[in-house]
Length: 308
Image (cartoon, rainbow, N blue to C red; front, side):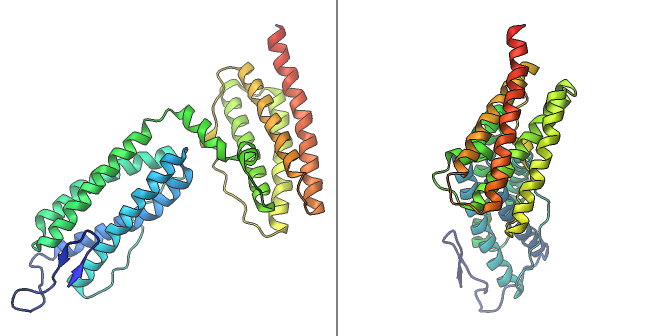
């Protein structure tokens, strides 16, 4: 006799003691599909939590993921009792690399899952299976409400808040840093700069100051990648585009460049206070000095707007 995660007892035996075989074998296929759905959600929600723009969203997505783990374990045990076999779960849908797209897909999927679990509830003969899927459907409905709430966040606010943990801002907010942390924050900041320049060029065309600095900072990424490889640290993926706020004007683009370089310089100054490998100290110093030059260029561009 199996007591599932919701506290309901599942008895795989009939009243005469023989193993109960479902008259409608489609219930087994449905439960297998539910297991795959939960298995996929567990993996995807871990990724979405990592991309979440606020600590509140991150924590709530982790809690939703814990619900999915409980569903997965309960459904797996029911499947084993009905078939005598261990399921072989598989990912049934890809998970977006972009936070908003992932949350939107999760909201739609949770709504469909509510209907699917109610369908299984209606088809099941065992009362404990019915109750397990009824409760799981209620959980999924609650999840969909949370995902709808996350979708209501303004895009600009999400990007601004999330940058507190990303790039130079993340480095400056960190209470302590390892060498790997420094490399990670540094390359995140370069990714962020590249994404910002791409957005500016799409919006306002190829302004020479931004074109020139963007090309220079591509070389910064190469220098940092060399350190990642040399010290055998994994190179972080580039997901900076989701954190970029497109400036409203060319003047605002120059102002954003000024702010970005000030933070960048402060980040490298903080790094240089630590005991570093000599090659890393050399790279960080060179990147700080390059940022000083870029800051001067952005300030000159901003001054032209302010004096006109």
